[in-house]
Image 1: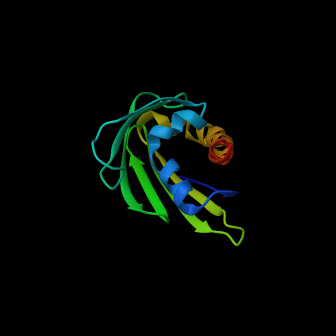
Image 2: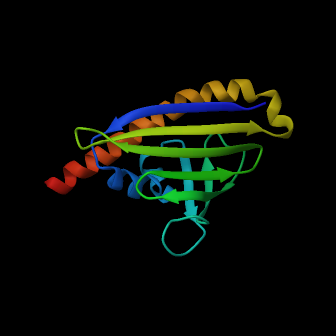
Length: 149
């Protein structure tokens, strides 16, 4: 049993700006109201091998997530285990207007007892993921406006 959630949207920022902000999961607490905590566990620049200890309102506990792909400014991937393993890949493409088309694709796989409630969980997460993407877009665009002021 697996579910895929995919969302695409445009952000009025360059792919480099979007990549630098969103590929660092430490920033998620600023734009995702469901992110309770995000603690970076590794030193150095964000890249393959970077790990975070995360807690979201919907997660059954603390999750360790690791960057498994990091190709600035085009794509990054994070993967985690737990009752639901998730692999999230975000792809960025420049637009003709100087912005970025962002596509997020996550694969969700339940384990153990979570298989019983997984169909309901996926419905909730589809809505939540759309909201998170919209919040991320607003955070990036608001940040640009504050820099210009």
